Amino acid sequence: MKRWWEKAVFYEVYMPSFADGNKDGIGDFKGLTEKLDYFMNLGVDCLWLTPFYSSPKVDNGYDISDYYQIDHDYGTMADFIEEAHKRKIKVIADLVLNHTSSEHAWFKEAISNPNHPKRDWYIWKDPINGEPPNNWESFFGGSAWEFDKKSGQYYYHAFAKEQVDLNWANPEVKQAMFEMMAFWLDKGIDGFRLDVINFLKVNNTFEHNPVDENNQQIHQYDKDQVGILEVMEEISSFVHQFPDKVLVGEVGSEEVDVLSAYSGKNKLDIVFNFNLGSIPAFDVDAIFEQLTKMEEIHTEDQLPTLFFSSHDMPRHISRFGEEGLEEERAKLLATLILTAKGVPFLYYGDEIGMRDLIHDDIVFMKDIQGVTAFELAIQAGKTEEEALTIANEKSRDKARSPMQWDESENSGFSTAEPWISFPTKREGINVRQQLAQSDSILSYYKKLLELRRNHPALHHGDYQLLEKNGDMIYFIKAAEGERVMVLLNFGREKVLLPPEARVEADILLSYKQEKLAATIEPGAAFILCLKGDKR
Image (cartoon, rainbow, N blue to C red):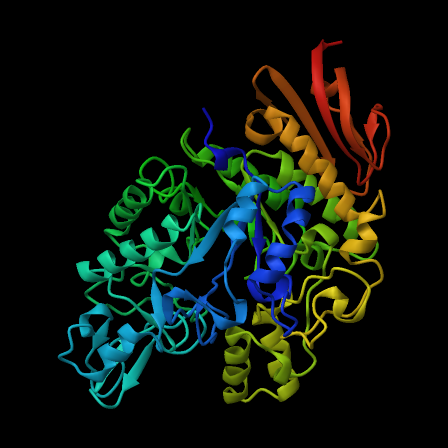
């Protein structure tokens, strides 16, 4: 019996950017509740909400100052979970267990006095020869150590200095986190997406990290440390005391064998496969290589994830698009995500082809990672123009612009000025217009989601075949006596129909080519329900 999440399609909602219900320019629960029918009609099964807890928002909510309170910008959750469940939509919450905001009451107590009981809830070290205790770098750039003049010690932060790492070697920290998770699970949350979960432990010898030939730091001692998998098992055991809950992990690695170690029985249920999601430019060989690698490395109790966009990376239609091919590639990749083996994660706005946001002035940039990159570039002697280019490359604002609902002012997101800018306006990239067009990206997504829901081989089938011919990826999946074949020609040349497709078949969906022939046209896709043996 498959668990619900093994067949589900997840949809990531970036909270401040999805729907503004109280018209202050920031997305909120009121707006989200008003859009629940949109999700139901689209056909997704579970919403993943980015952090909605109280936060000063140095890192847009990933710096939590109170785990038990909803941030004032987002209003109240009220009937949201109940209304989602009425529509058979589950909800998981993004949760940061690695660090708190420096504004959290725990850290305020810890920094107030070196002898305070909360001091050991965080990681403190004495200076060495007046310098930080080691060379560890923040993943946002610069040192991972911040000096506290009052006590004469440094505290550790893997990300921004306002995101202070918790000391998970202290059992009191673990207990406090378990109590907090129980609070939200009791409220009806269907599980958690655990942020940077492989950072929960650091090497307590605090050795210097090595550097590579390009003088880039190798994070050998500040993530994926001995004992981390035991912590995952404890978290899993605790959360799974509550029925039908899912644990999704963000593990900061692109190594499939590292990722797979965190998922499976008694661990995390799902771990993001960044090796697929972070392919920097369109490359059929790289996509196929990662699909095959995921199939090879995962065991029976593990499933890969399928995604190409998130709040931390550029939108894949901008990353992979070429002039005249953006919509075609968007549809082909949607087909891959929603039919290949694994758990699909859709990112808001990808279903209408939203593009990247590029800032023309640093004053508009909201992302701490981009702003930090700008400041470091200026310090390194770059011009403001050069620094802005670097900042835009590093910035995660690209994929965080407001959802585009219609062609009215502010794209129907809000009547107030939105908290962040929109990308350069393009005709037809909004929900209202695309719902009215049978050949739009949104209409295509809806067809795919309906097909997936109605065909067991699509939503939880195993591969019987996974092959590539030229620039065409094709595979057969089977479940419950059904066999489905998917053909995706990403290239600009015709490709011969593979022998495995030369059987009786019903065409469930076709794109750019109506009927099966001896060749598959450039940019064409087919989903076939196979019926017979080879002719």
